[in-house]
Image 1 (cartoon, rainbow, N blue to C red):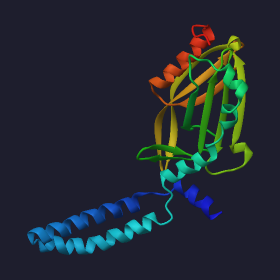
Image 2 (cartoon, rainbow, N blue to C red; image 1 turned 180 degrees about the vertical axis):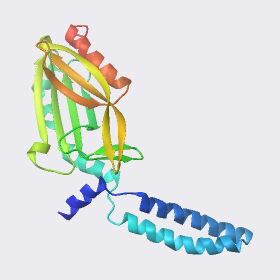
Image 3 (cartoon, helix red, strand yellow; image 1 turned 60 degrees about the vertical axis):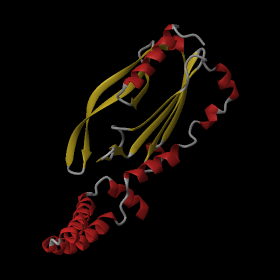
Image 4 (cartoon, rainbow, N blue to C red; image 1 turned 30 degrees about the horizontal axis):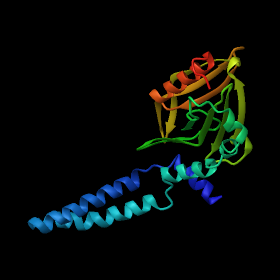
Length: 234
C-alpha cells in the first residue's frame, strides 16, 4: 500500500523543492571554491551558509521520491515477455513475410481510464502504457497488444489482445495526428500525438494505437498498405 501511494504521488508531487535545493548546493559550493581561490570572504560566508541549506532541501525533496526511471522500470517488468509466445510459435514463423520485419510499438498513452500524467525533462509519463507487436504474414496481419497500468493491477486497467486479419479484409492503415490535453501538477498542456489506425473493408477500426510522431510511423503505415494492396509479396 505504501509503495502504491508513492507511485501515485509521482504524478502529483512537485519536484521544485529538491531541484532548488540541488541548484542551491551547487552554487554554494562554487562560491566556496571562488572564495578560497580569490580570498573573497563574503562568498565564503554565503557558501558556508547556503551549502547546508541546499543539502537539507535536496534531501527533504528527494526522500521517497519516485523517479521517471522507476516508472519506466515498472512498465518494463510488466511487459518483458508479453510477445514471447507468438515469437516462439513455429507455425507463425513459417508464415512470416520475408519482405517486411515485425514492427514494435511502445508508448505511454495520452488517453485512458483514470489516466494520470506528468511532464518530465525527457518527455511525458502517464499511468497507462501500451505495447504492440505486429507480425506481417504472407497472407494476413497479426498483432498482439498489451496495455498495462502503472497504478492498478485490476484486469479492467490491464488487457491483452491477439488478433489476425487476412489482408483481403483490411481497407488500409493511416497515421492520425491531433492534439490532446494533459495535466501535469496544476498545469494543463496541449500535446501533439500520433496514432496508427487500421480499418477493415466493412469500416471497422480494429487497431487504434499511439505511435511516435515520426517518419518511422509513416513508413509502418505505408508498409501495411503495400501488403494490403499486394505490392509486397511474401
